[in-house]
Image (cartoon, rainbow, N blue to C red; front, side, top):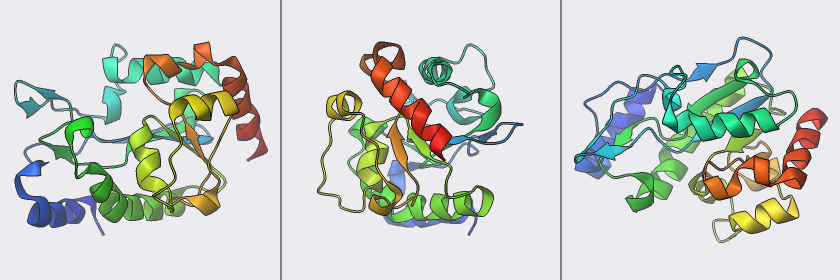
Length: 202
């Protein structure tokens, strides 16, 4: 299935929540051997009542991109990770007319429509041993097989918690790699070292 078919199904079910006036932002594929997959929620950033158009995920091609800046800082905290050896994509590739935190259908759409699509695509391109770094807690909530599990960001970072492939719909190890300034990896040296160590185990 092509992503536009997924979007067509979403428009049929969710109507005006789905914004279709822009092309899907392109993913980023590093030119080296891929060591990790970085996932965002979706490309939606509402300004003056409508989404801003992006040409690439997180506007990663723009060195001054405010969407990529915090993620890039985290990336530089992990030994051996750079833009050249990661794949970067959004879970939901379509734009919405509401930002993620205000979109009460986001988890449902991610879980039922996009994660199955993305999981299949990732499996066709990358070894199942390559882990996923999640830039927002919304992705974790959508991906866990047991949707009743709740794990707050502070507990994840302070307890050095990851989520094994058996527990999530991607069937890959998941790590919190949150964009929120409180969870910048510069402030979490033990958790940062935990991720670095786990990456080298894959």
